[in-house]
Image 1 (tube, rainbow, N blue to C red):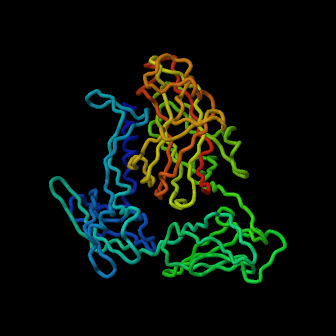
Image 2 (cartoon, rainbow, N blue to C red):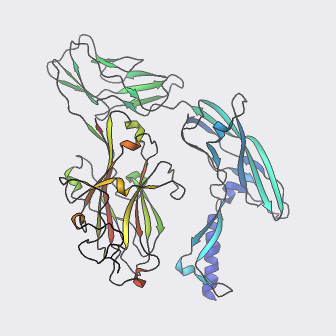
Length: 508
């Protein structure tokens, strides 16, 4: 009985946690008998959002008389009062409470009145109820917008509803230029010839802009309308002069500015005669992986803990050191599935989202990562008990379960313990493929045995250049349910490493 009391307390605590946003989401009425239509819906306005871009509101406050609300967008209009048609509203959605079923911690298991062991709980999660989302690449241009929201509650057979007109105000400003591309990055300006830099591409942002130089103004000039850079009349040099100009882009609509500078942006070499300059590679995302934090490049979603340890850090792949850029330090992360009862496990390593459109012109794009499996021993039928899969998403915004993920193992090329061998398509099958019985998956190949060896993998990103929200994910999962002990005492789930995940853009 004592254990059951503690269990019920634990469930109550969980339910209270899930409902902990009540005071932030809707105001309770202390008199439960006074049910009426929702009132006092309030949103914080969003000012200076960017045209045609992803937008997400905060969680609203509403008085529902202690009933759980559901929300509906029922209309909208622009700043001049014109009603927004379906082409606008099709990109607008609003979140509602959801019922979730989750696992209890083992210490909170209990036996119900029917004598059944209860290991899960069901609760209503309304932490994000009422949040309004506008999808990327929408039709919301510069201006003001107002939305009407209907809120409904239900008590037994009675439904209570209120519509709040103009309750959410959205102000949209011009999309700023976030990527200015000079191609090639390294350019030669020859004194006395009148030659100039290339015209820069505005990869992103509203094109109503002007250009200014914030550096090297004693040597260079810039065309305010086109962004073309040239040497000043009368400039001379006795030797090659390398310059990294700072360019400011100003919106003529809002007067906001963005600034660009650096050796991965533009390098100009002024000389008295033409010279050849090498093409450059921009490692535009090379996280350290030194801790589980988006600051260091990734997040973990522990889908099913099983008997694993947490993901932890270790030394990076020595194979990657051969091509890791100077000045970049990186760790590997690994997870050990072979612990305790060897319960089934699944977890996702989600790499920070990248905007690939900024390299849509003039670059060859790829993602590179290094992986290793260790201590994987096959099940009786010869199949691996665990494996690593690679996915990508174009719509991940922080919720792993609602994003659309596409498996891309067969799009990756691999090199085992070498950077000079011919790459093969796909990831190597986990475990020592020279032993272990049958091959029910039909994927074993002794010539591609990567057991306890680092494998360099590369994904061609050129087919994905139009994706602003490209997210890479690694999944380590079990190919069995329950405990591996019930299947085999000889099989081992093993250990998986990930190292030196990075994205690079090489000039074509």
